[in-house]
Length: 192
Image (cartoon, rainbow, N blue to C red; front, side, top):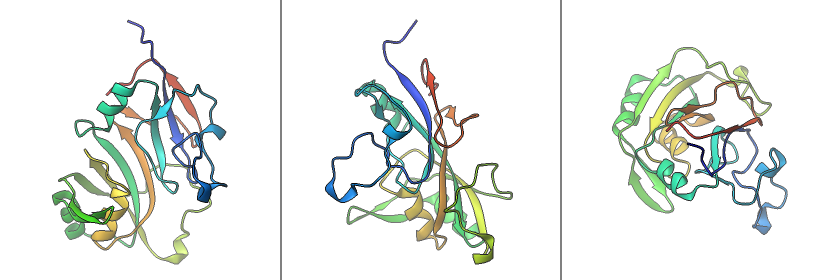
């Protein structure tokens, strides 16, 4: 059965806002998704990735589907590069949930999946990535069922390992696949 809706998968690159139109005076020179793709005005990103985060962004003109995917039933997976060599204690704290500030109020994150990755993931580098001469780094894989404002960054900072790079790799069963930064693909429907 064909859908009357339009869906895209996009690798949002570092340095772009997760929006097509800029309605803020203080953000005049920001890069927007419209520079990467030309779509009808009903298309909207499902959730957000902040300007310094990258990776999988799903887009649709189906509001109900957008609401479902943003909910707690759908997993979101991230590769996270942190400052320093993360230890088991910090990973266990992430798994159990940590206190983070969300719009001035403290919130304990839900328990999540978190594990250290022994080798850096095979992802393209970008010019803002930290050079190894500035100290050791390590990678984590984090899987959440919630998405508070800058949550992953706040979580790793709360356990003493600030986030240096954040890449969303999966939403539900949808993943980046062969996409490269800035590339997008039209899909018939999302496998959530």
